[in-house]
Length: 249
View 1 (spheres, rainbow, N blue to C red):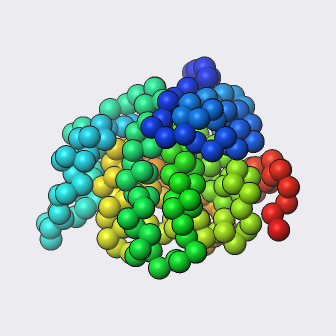
View 2: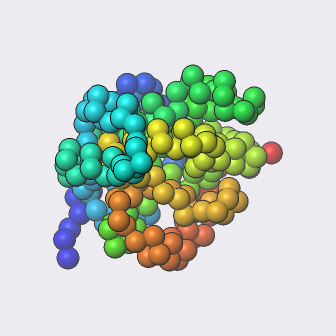
């Protein structure tokens, strides 16, 4: 059996993260510097390689490309991944790429058209931070989920870190999952996630289900993914919630 390298992951990101991320085991947020101890942070850590593509290349060669009747946006993204992505064991590179992806997808200009007046720029920041860390989760082509961290369970993790009540945590999860609830945002998401080597997929039907999401490679078995997820999620969600500083009102 291959031994997975569990050396600490350290990255300097463009913006400081909320220091309360340190409430979760195995992660330390010190301004822009994030340090993760894989052995403590992950519930399951079986793979230390990820597929990534250069974000500047995604911006210049994919974001502005329009789909046609012959070439869908999913095909455009798949072709780009095949041509430009590479495997990396540098988790800091994955996190840096993910930060750029989510800084783009969850940018403040979208607030005006979101249709949720209670949703603020601060909520967008929470989404950017949680989604960045989510990028270390991984699912294999056969559908087996190889890496699972606390941010798989989005409402649970954000409630612990940001002291959110269930309603606000659920709202955050809806915006994360819903791609801003429209096709324009979904198309934008598909293109941007090419930088992380796949597409964003979810195991859940609705917020209360809390089955999370991952950037999965195109072609991954969703049947096996669903079955694997069902086997572990309840216990691990409970473990995340156990780190709440105080119960949300």
